[in-house]
Image (tube, rainbow, N blue to C red):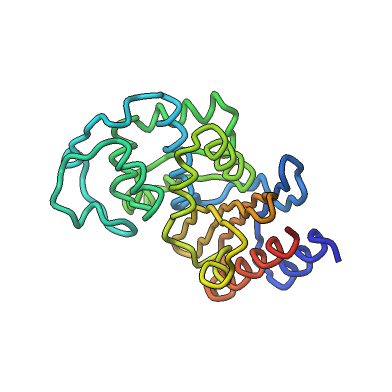
Length: 246
């Protein structure tokens, strides 16, 4: 059975829609609802990262994070006493531990308008940054960050190709419980670079699997699953299918 047929069979078991976009090297090999806009959750951090790195600022520039209100959720920055951090360290925190506070500091540094302008200028038409991370009042007012599987994967591939320093950040990203779930501790012949996102009834993962000199890139975005164990199990199964296909 082909990879496409296996993925089709896997996702057919769920009534909730699943958005998937998949490349093997530079060939599109799978697309399902890939241009649907969904709540972005932490996958929006790919857009923040891309905007910052394309500015080619000195990444050793220091920012006083105390000028941005603290938020909780994922990350450690709000637990630390140090108030001044380099841009590079903030970006690393934003990716490796999905730090929401660091992401908001970078939004304030860049401006929301500048991030959206970069997205529009680079044809990411299904992605918009409309609020800071963990801004519950903005959510109540109907402002949501959105992205599609196609945009998420294109951002991810662009970052890995154009800014090699990010490869180590994605490879050492600490949230590994979705697409890489069954492989990190048991499989030595594959490297998995990824960035997850999650929120109420939202689970996403964008990843690159590299094995035997070949790579497969995939974005899996979900929204509306009330059974979180089911969606995580589905993502882990997709990861296994990709591993076997390589």
